[in-house]
Image: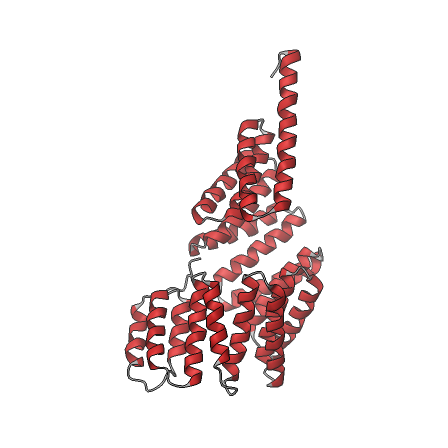
Length: 367
């Protein structure tokens, strides 16, 4: 994903030169975070090597391992990232409470990425207990936010909603607008999933106002997409399309390909609901080309199924069969048993249609 906030690497050259003049790593973490947020990963590794060379105290060495773990996660080297986090925590002085809090959070997020959500939840519960011990409201909100994400992955929607409501209250008390905006967006999504549509609309509209106030175009585009999903559920096709097109324009401007694929898929579904099959096919094909380029197997699979539906409705049975066959192969690769079963059923119905066509031609002479 491309971040719209990129700056030139030279913006950090001054800091790198400045760090050589410092007796400790006071400015190092701030510089590293700024480089990482802007995806200057080569510079991050350069800063990391410099910090490792100069780290002398136990806390500084732990800090270096912590930031190496963050970079390993960026690179997809999750096992090595976990080792870095474990090493950092093992050598951490008891006085380094802030770094301990951050480590618990990152270890939890990494465990969630690795599919071990129960371990992730345990880390985030420990993180919340630490925040409570030090009566740090901002930390408590962050930990509850992470717990909610764990519950979402576990499909425990009520527990996720409760955790987010607690985080929302804490963000309100701390006047954290960014935290409030994120909470409202996710509460809206949970309400939408649970078909609590008025609550979903209330939270998503509030998130839109806050992200507009913060001037966060990427987050605002995601909220527009979620509002489109809400309108889609209500079968308000024109409203849904308007939201999706605003989201699409923003994702295109920011060069955010992954989210753009999802919006194109949704626009195709709206066109199909309006029985505009040609427009639906154009949206699906554009999304499929981007998904293939990005290497998103799940996205390719979903778009192939939708194209198969259009081909089937237009009588192009061989094209539909080819779409379903490729999608079935992908479901096996990603281990989606439910999806594979659905595609076997689709192929069976397609086979029956082909058989009926053959019988019709055989006995009536008509196509």
